[in-house]
Amino acid sequence: MIPLKPRLLVCDWNGTLLNDLWLAYVSTKAIFEAYGVPAPTLLQYQNEIESDFSKFYIQHGITQFDFDFNNRMRRKIFEENWDKVELHDPVMAKHILVRVKQLGLRLAIVSAEIPDVLARRMAQFGLEDVFDCVVGGAWPKNAALRDVLVHFDVKPEETFYIDDTLEGISIAKKLGIRTIGFTEGYNTRQQIVAAKPTYVVNSLAEMLSILQGWVVPS
Image 1 (cartoon, rainbow, N blue to C red):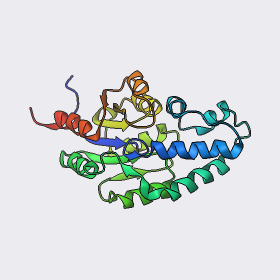
Image 2: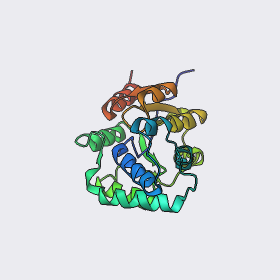
Image 3: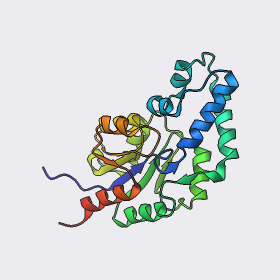
C-alpha cells in the first residue's frame, strides 16, 4: 500500500516550539525551595518529568503535594520572566510554520499549557493566524489528539505530530500518528530516540525538510 501524504501537522508547545526548558527548571527549583526540599538536578528533571508533575515532586521528597500552590508558583515565575522566553529558532520559526502551510498541510497545537497562557504566547509571537486549531490544557493528550483528527477529518496516517517528550511521542504512536521526536526540548535525546518516533530532528528546519520530502510531487 502506498503511504498517504500528510494533511496535518500537530505540534506540542512547551519545549517543542517554545524554548522554555530552562524556565521550567527554574520554577521547579523554586517550588522545591519553598517546601524546604533539595531540588533534583536538571538532568534528573529532563529524564523523569512527565505531564503528571505530581509524581516527580513526590518521588523527590515533596510528600504533601499541593497542586494549586505549585501551579501558582510556576505561573508567578513564568510571568516574571515572560519576555526572556523565545521560540526555538526564533528568527526562522514562524517562517518555517508558514512554509508548512504553504505545502498544503493544516496546522494545530495540542498542549498541556494553561489555555490563557498559551493564547498570550501565541499573540506574543504573532502566531494566532498561523495555526488552524489550538488546544490548551490537554492532559493527558490522548483525547485531544483524537479530537483534532476528527476536527480536520484526517486519518492518523495522514498526520504528523512533533513533540519533545517520550510520553507525547508514545501517545501519538499508539493512535497511529506519524511522529517526529524533537531533541532540544524537555526530555534528553536518549529518551527521544528510545521512544522510536518515525523521525528524530534537532531543529524545526529539519522537520520542514521531512515534510517537504513527503509532499513534493514525485
